[in-house]
Image (tube, rainbow, N blue to C red):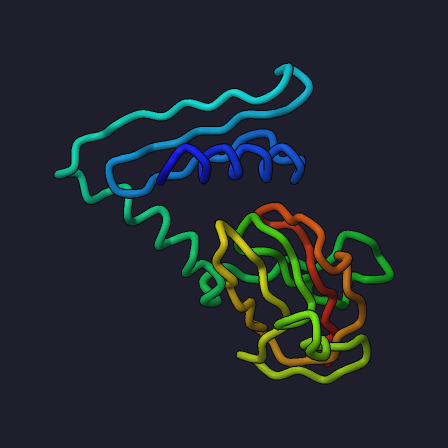
Length: 161
């Protein structure tokens, strides 16, 4: 990872509103902290031993999280308690379409099946397809197109009935 990519990551994290992001890739460990308690951004870059394969596991676990191992939490309001909330498995930029000239993946009222692509989230210039872990009907899209999203941020409400 070069300096320009780190600077872009810092800007992206600052815009997203996240207070802290930790990234481990190979022998580089990066922690970015933002927020009201800090004026601007703080970045810590550490070199760690190459022989330690452990940093690969957290990144892989984070990418693989939407495998259904974690149950989707129901929405907090009483009206929406029967709905399932689909949350973002990663931090990035939320897109409803695969490209600007294509139609959106899902519309409100559309019936979806488990494994259907709901959106893409761009993280570090990679577009990650977010698939549904449940079958049902899209009730509400909770995020605007091309908006930054945080880890575990609600994206969609789905009626499983």
